[in-house]
Structures are given as structure tokens and as C-alpha cells.
Length: 540
Image (cartoon, rainbow, N blue to C red; front, top):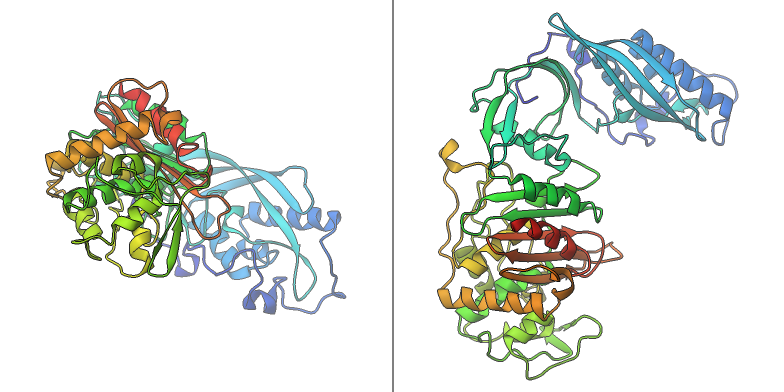
């Protein structure tokens, strides 16, 4: 459900905001009244709640919730105000009644339970069933056993400041179809869920459908609503997308190889997005909206800068020493890489030699702005992309000092996501920048971003270096077995606080370019590489 949901008029005291700060943590309000009564009870107890306390507290909480007594149930939590607001709104805004809760067997202080209820609105009713859990903790000031308040106690997908609302949807449902006319559903393509929600949010009123009645989660950051239950079907409008069902299916399976991973595939000749998939613990579309350092996949743009500015060429010199110093900071290569003072740019590129690129960025006529101009003017990075849904179009800032060198190898202040890097690869091998999109710009007459692209000679050299990387360099293992016109670039990016590097990989096969990032796995060829290769197999 989108913005503008029509709901019954209720007292403002029952607004459905999951209010309060620090759920699950002790706060000042709870310190004054963390047992819900504010009175002086028996002698204060300490230590974890006993099994009997867990059982009795959860039992009383469930009983009050079932009766619709928000105040009584909230008094049994460690955050009265936030709990009462959401529990009251459960009935008044979400229109959920006839609640029956069945507790499961407790594990320590945690009690699982199932909820069966009825959602009723405007003469329409439907059953609702789900499972969740709560934890009983010791009240800080009174020592009483209390439910540790979290929004997920009411519904497992609720997060802080989310709202549960039942009403007529402002945007009709859509029937999104792939490039072959087949319907794209969340059930068949689970990681497409956030994308389909975003498409409905933006194009629901343009696709010719009529609204239905739904129970949905409204999010505080204005991201698309999450539909939970449909009470009355509207008429879905048909929305044509650029997605390829076969590529999307491959992407869905591929991202499951590693946690916190994302992949995007595009058609280089047009910019059409063929697949987008995420394997995450949240609904964030990191494939389109992520902002991570891309590691050595950035060397595609850096190599283009070196060639375009006459610093070197594919077969020109790019020495690879064991270390390089730039303005007081020392840069090294991956462990085990043999130095090669006579290396060409192609050799240093396919081996992903950091020091070769660091040493060359000091050459004239390069300046602090050279990499930024190359990224923007040639590859369209940072040029306000309008893909059809929310997306981040990359960032390559002009910087001085050590970060100028770090930027050249995809660290420092450079930020990218798989969408950006798939587009970079598409531009590198065709010489033409086609801004990626998932819905045709003709549908809403939006103006897409433009860039002048690359000279033929530069694109030809970049494509050849990526081919060498896929057949003789760091991408050999991942791209093994793929026939046709192929090429790739590996990358890894160190992130503060992570024990292993983020893994990046971008490649092409025939008229498909794909890029992936995963926060697991380290080197690009080992983790992100297999994800991209699996998607490229769908290129035929």
C-alpha cells in the first residue's frame, strides 16, 4: 500500500507510530515506570526471570492483548508508552480483532507464539495468521518480570516507527511483466519484492488498475509500503519491465551462494536492466541503492583515464613493484603477487596490480579532478540516473592527498553498487553510455542521464584487457566454462570493522554485463565471481 491510505478517523492518541527510542533497552521513562504501575511492590528481585515468571508474564500479556486491553498489556512491558500506542493501533488503525494467541515452548526467557485474528474493514474481512516471539526481562527499577518491548512483538516484520494500516490503497496493484510478457511475482522471485513494491509505488496510478483494500506496513522513510494481506482485490494494471525472467531466475539462485550479496545484469546495447537480486536480512535494494567501495573493479575507469589522457596504453608501460608510496601512504599488492617492473597496462590490469595504478596517477597531465571527470563524462557516474525506481548513481569525488591514490584502486572515497559497475562494464565494452533503466522512460517521459562515452580505441583496449582477465588473469576460475564473447574484472575492498574484504566482480558475455558484490568471501574471483558467472550463463 502506498502513501495516502484511507483509514477510519480515530483519536490522535491512537496514532500507529511505533514510537519511542531504544526498543529493548532501558530508558528514562521506563526507569520511572518500568513495571507499568509506578507503585511500590514487593521486595525488588534480581537476576534473570525464572521459568515461572516467564510463563506468567507472557500469559498475562497475551490475555490482555487478546481482550484488546492495550493499557493492561503495555503495563506488562518495559516501554509502556510505545507498547500501548502500537497495541491500541492494532485494533483502531490496522482493524485487527478476534485475536487468539497460542504460546509455544519457551527457550530460556524467549517465548514463541502464533497469532490468529481477523482483519475487518468497510464490510470486508479476512483471516490473518502469523508467528512471532517475545523475551521476558527483569525490570530495572522494580525487579518485576516484564516483556522486553520490540515492535516485532506485535508483528514480526515491524521495525521502529513502522505503522500497521488497513484501508483502501492509494496506488492500485500492478501486474509487472518481464520482457517476454510473463508475470513477475514475489513468490517466484522473492528478492524482486522491494523492486515490485517500488514499481507499484511509482507506477500504480499509471498502469490502469483500480485500488483494493489491504493490510500493510507503512514505513517512516517513505519507502514503498509492504503489503501483508489483501481483503478485497482491486484490478491490477499491467506494467512492462525490462527484466528477463531467465536472467532473474539465475540471479535469484546465484545470490543465495553468499549472505549480504547483490547482483545486477544489464543489456549493454540499450541499458535495460535484465536482472536485479539481493540476498539480505532486510528489504534494502543494495543492488541499486548500495554505497560501497568497489575495490579493483574501479580499475576499469582508472585504466580508461590513463588511456584517454595519453599516460599509457594497453601495451604501454605500467610497472608493478611490490609497493608504491603516494604522499606518505604506502600501498601494496595482494599477498603472493610477484612484482614486474616491465609490466604493461594489460598485464597489471589482468593481475590487478595496485601499485601499477598508484604509480601512474602522478603522471602529467593528470590532476585531482581527472578520475572524477572520466567517471562522469565518459561513464555517466554521478549524473542523476532515473532508472524507474530509486537508485544511487555512483560517486567518484575529486580529492587530494592519499585518497586520490586510494580512489584509483576503488578504495578511499569512491562509492558504487552492482548497478553502477554493471553499467561501467557495459560502457567499457561498447564505448557508449546507456543509462540503466528497469521501466521504459517513455512511460512517464522522464529524461535519462547522458554521457559522451569512450573513444573507440579506449573501449577496444578496455574490452581486450577484460578478455585477458577472464582467460588469463584473476577471473579465470570464475569464468571457466563460459563460451562466447567474455571478459571480467575482479575486486576486493577492505571495510573498517569487517574481518574479511567485500568481494566484487564484474563481467560480460555477449550482450549482457553483470556485476555483483558480497560482504562475504574476500577476493572477487572467489565469491562475487561465481554469482556473476551464474547470471552470465543466462545470456545464451
